[in-house]
Image (cartoon, rainbow, N blue to C red; front, side, top):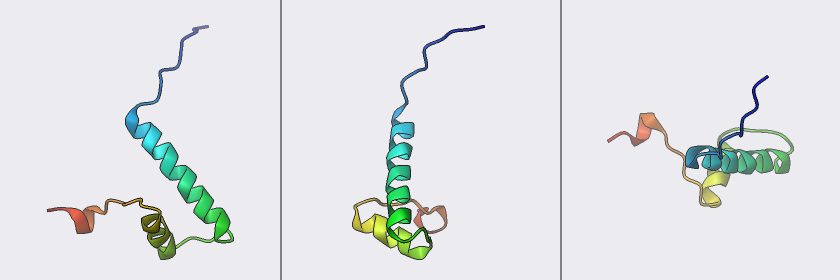
Length: 57
């Protein structure tokens, strides 16, 4: 049996957890539906999502 200390989450994991929390909140508030409206709702909260198809320069 190995015992080890779990490393602190990195910046990307912290950001991902925050985004997941926002998405779960939106999902709950929308009556547990999803769709294109979720993207707009995240944007209104100041969360910008990266879309490789549209955002590559």
